[in-house]
Image (cartoon, rainbow, N blue to C red; front, top):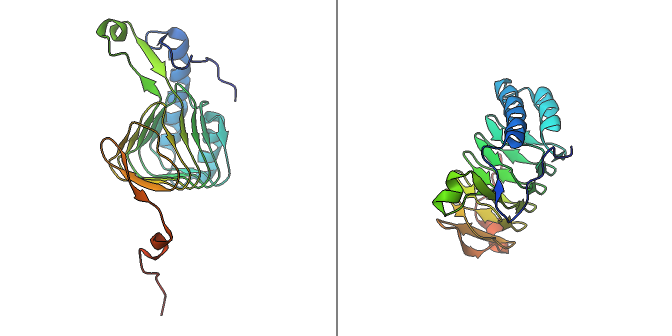
Amino acid sequence: MQPKVKVPLYCLFQGCYNPEFEAEIEKCKEKCHRYNQLSPNDREAQGRILSELLGGMGENVVITPPFWCDYGYNISVGNYFYSNHNLVITDGARVTFGDNVFIAPNCCFTTAEHPTDPEQRKAGLEIAKPITVGNNVWIGAGSTVLAGVTIGDNSVIGAGSVVTKSIPSGVVAVGVPCRIKRKITEEDKRRYPMFRPE
């Protein structure tokens, strides 16, 4: 699906009080509303709405309602994508998720930034920066990922984090602001005992 309106990246643009953007957001919110009214177990109907809402979608995609976004067509998700309740994506710029991404409840991905200058902010100017999440990433509950961030493959973002800067591959990162805690190692395979039925 091709975007109806293109947002300029890394420069101020008239994001608010813009009839063209507002019309696109209204259409997207209507689709989100229909999606959120479905039975949470109606995967077939969910898939139909997601395929018309998102810009790209792999196989075995589950987005547990409620789910809200601004445009939809700027979002691309890979194979085996799972998000729990209350995912919010403000997708003024591209938001790209790789394969095997897990997102816990109450997470927000926002590509929008507003000016620090109060006059520019009052005038409705904003900036949009893309977000990229690699393959095999787990985002913990209540995390917020801010504009311009890339999260590398195989990393874990701890619950409640605010990710203000890019995170490399293969690490555990947590906090406000989110910082690298440690690398993921072979020892993590033995972190929890394996359940073996008797």
